[in-house]
Amino acid sequence: MTTHDARRLPARHPEDVEHLDGAARGELRLPFCRTCGRPFWPAGPVCPRDFSTDVAWLTDPGRGTVTSWVRFHKRYYDGDAVPYVVVQVTLDSGPRLTTSWTGADDPRAGEVVMVSFRHLGRGAYLPEFGPADRH
Ligand SMILES: [Zn+2]
Image 1 (tube, rainbow, N blue to C red):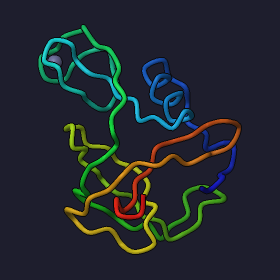
Image 2: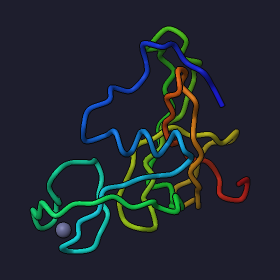
Image 3: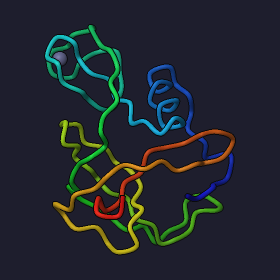
Image 4: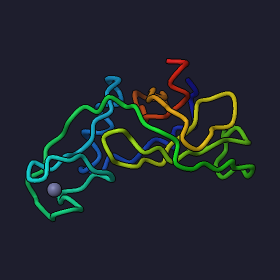
């Protein structure tokens, strides 16, 4: 678990509060559509599939696979440790997240991953993913 500069704390936009508060509890909270019954991401007031506004939240198990990844060698913010890896994870439930990588080795496309939660400071957490066999 890494702590970052306070200026990098996520903004608490109304559509993200449930997700951020869930992360602080160790839960991956995602919006889901009550009309088609499927979770989606990013969060918003409308289902991207059928435009239903009948949206609620669920706790996702946080298991998925690596779809793609990239290693950044440039420091964009003070306090960032470089290089660092960002992955795209397709959750077993469907949504695709762009997120931080916790693995010691490079991710592999198709690798099974599990969520964990990174403390950013001042009670703020974000989900991140790493190899499922280490959880
Ligand atoms: Zn829907």
